[in-house]
Image (cartoon, rainbow, N blue to C red; front, top):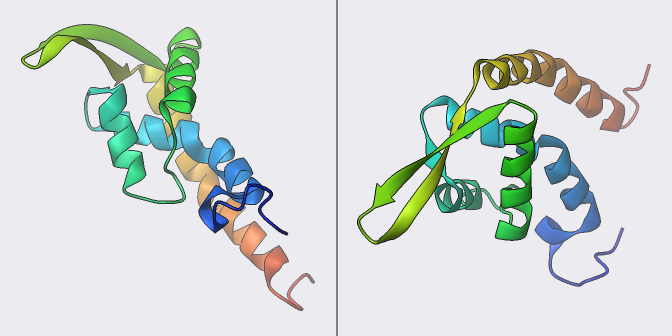
Length: 121
């Protein structure tokens, strides 16, 4: 499969679809250890090329997590500018993350099994 934008494998359509499928849970996992603000989440995700995303993706995702009750927010003063909106994991968000973490190994194993040549039986 070719990358229509010519921007490299990590930005191809398959990578984009995979990222969309797991990004929400990766963000929840990052919130598990404590409150974070949007740019902080972008930086942390950016440490892993397959998870790197943009503000145009992360902020709508964070809004959706808030609307669905998986995350909550609060404002905290910043020494370098305006107050920052921090996101925290709610009990529902923790439950969703735990469910994903429980299902992920079997899901990953099943995909690995199907992708392995001659291993579909």
